[in-house]
Image (cartoon, rainbow, N blue to C red; front, top):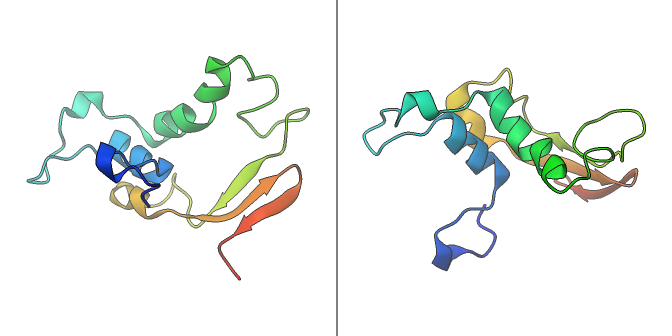
Length: 107
């Protein structure tokens, strides 16, 4: 999914970013700098927990915990159990904000 940044050459799809962080491959399929690749857990942390921490809002955002806002997404697959080379194929099924479904991939 490209969100309108074709000229910048940047894909804002978080699952493409997670896939890239975990499976950084060269054009010939080799892992580029394997020691620099993240685990799935590290990549998900970078996309979910780290941003609220960076802006000082981690007391209310970033994790599903009592007392925090219940904004979340339901994914098509479990990134912890699916093959790592398929992480870029995950998509959002539902988005919940303020306890209400604001996006559904199903009609």
